[in-house]
Image (cartoon, rainbow, N blue to C red; front, side, top):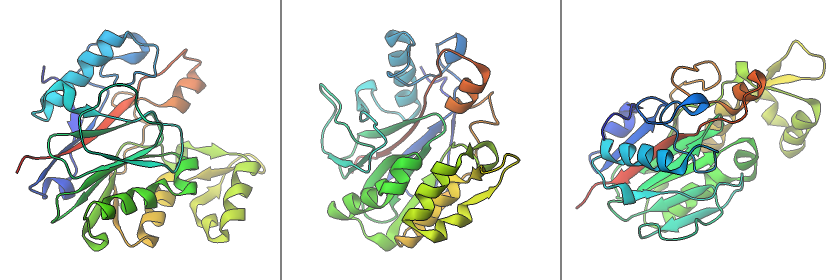
Length: 259
């Protein structure tokens, strides 16, 4: 039950009251395109395998299987406060915050940015799923605000970005570019020239980090490119380019230790 392979962020490891993991795709029981630690109930993988994979993830964090908490991610700016273990339908949202020990806030991703948040001194944590739409419409800032509502302090919060698609792997078209420039012309710095006319390479990690820094929060990108590293990470875009029928989901998790 402890085969799940994960990556830890040094800045979160230094916070005594939290445990966390950016899980890779390794160390699970799924096979085929889902091999092997697929944590996504939204995939077409067998549910029993997904639940066993999730149990392995929780075991790696020294938590019971039912500590796993997540939301129905819809690329929104919406954030929910979590106070108890999950029972029943998942709320539609893309961020979570809690001050309750023993709950693992888990975000699923396969190119979009999985962020883990923690207050360095106060016992408040958060997560969010930041794809381009959520990042543009405020999910990162809203996660910070939700943590502050629970007692966190802005200048003590740290946010860490796990495996996400890198700019060199993310080509976008003119309508996408214009949407960002219409919102704020300074967002142009997050686009680089592409080989195709009218297209550009979009640096989602840099855009998200910039949003957090503007919000007064320390933010770190671990520099892990989902698209380029098929051995360790799932990638929606890579699966499309390969013509695969489906793709697995990575899980990133953070929990407060008991008092």
